[in-house]
Image 1 (cartoon, rainbow, N blue to C red):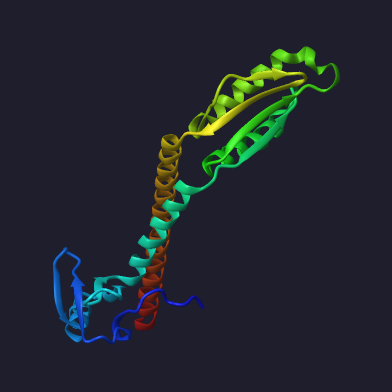
Image 2: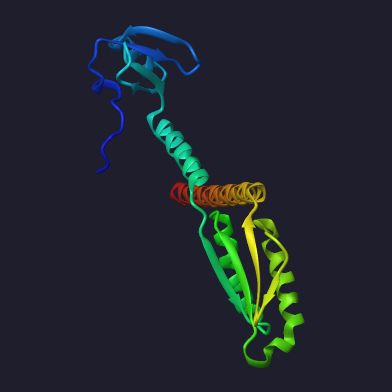
Length: 218
């Protein structure tokens, strides 16, 4: 079990604390009184600065408090994450299924903040299909346009045609918001369907009960 990060409620044994209230007010008060205030609001008393004089506590929902901390830490990790270089490789005659599979991986890499190198490999005499390679790069660029952008134009070196893509933070954030909204809408739809199913079930049960009562009376 994960050890609790903060002392809360009755675990705060010091006699006096500085309290931050949800609406922004601050007061120095007896710990027992602060705990009563938190209980009346249906919240927790959370020690956030134990070394201050007096120690600082916050009145908040502890679960939500931890969620906000985790959210901020996650955002900080995203900003400090070292970008890795990933590669996806194609051939000029790559079929649709293989193209979609590799393009999906490239999208995932970009969404995670990694740089992507896409390479079209011309094996043997396939170099004669150079134009197909450029067309494939164009398709890939269009496919990745919601999460990234080319760092520069494609380059041909020997029998390899390659291009680099970098994450587009603004587009990725917009996509994440869109996907989150879709997930929430789907959840509401499922909840509405379940509520309707339960309503119909209750109606059917009520009708059966009424029918049984009528049969018993007759």
